[in-house]
Length: 386
Image 1 (cartoon, rainbow, N blue to C red):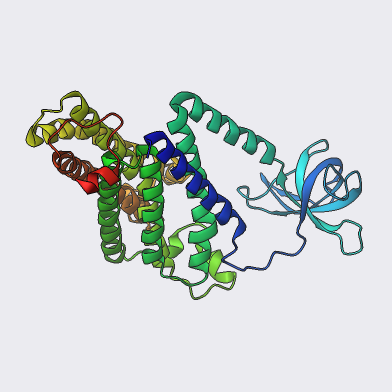
Image 2 (cartoon, one colour; image 1 turned 45 degrees about the vertical axis):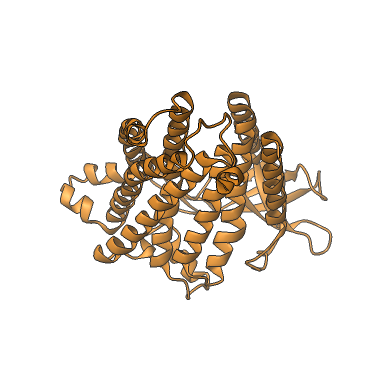
């Protein structure tokens, strides 16, 4: 089959899978009361019941809003905005703000309306479209396949992984299957059904399995549990007492680093592919040495990327410890900080290990046939026939 047709067929299959995932419902969780959502413009605000304690506001803020969409467009409804005193969760509204409203209409008239935050869905959709256009503009057809892989990964997590965990499936085993599925789709979609794609997939899975093993070992040695993650305790209070939060925490570690692992494996595999294409006569040892030289440079920056990515999301927490003058030992020994240290270091182990592993796998794959490889690389079907 023509390489372009093969890639188009693979992309079509992923598209069909995305549509299928969008339509399925594995969790079977009943919808929350209300169920109707639309944009609404705040026309009046009643702050008479709001209590202010320094910078924290509590009690209820009553809003009058005009619905801007849905079956009740143009109608006005009273909305309650409950302020809990937690600034990370609360929003305080003013007249003229457009918000997202959830309401019910048992008698055909909107009632029991609740504010769900300033309306941001339009801007989010705009950013997603802009991201997709930029990806296609820079990377062409490969960028289109990458965007498709991005959508597929999001749907697999939302429609498969999270619902399966809620239904009591073992988190670690389920996570490994899901990551293997995502890794295969991403690697073969971006790298093609070629030796490059196969080397990327094999190297990535080695790094992910190593990360999973280390995460399991050190989570128990650190005496950590899954409740250190935000909203984990709330999940138990929602009625899911059967969930193993520690195993979910372990799964989150190797899932979180899987993207960086795939990225590095793809860099190495693409480098090995280009070296072999430019120098078909290169020996296997020299081929490996060239790949390792690139791997060393990329690994050095990737481990720093993980450190910055994880620590950057906890800037306020680190500032609190510094502001209170607490010793670094107190900071590093705290359970939630130890969990992040484990996340960073174990993820870095996987990233470091994936480079030499991918180099060895790629060198062996390109050594199977001693004739110059084709450009684009030969498909796996040809490789297997050889």
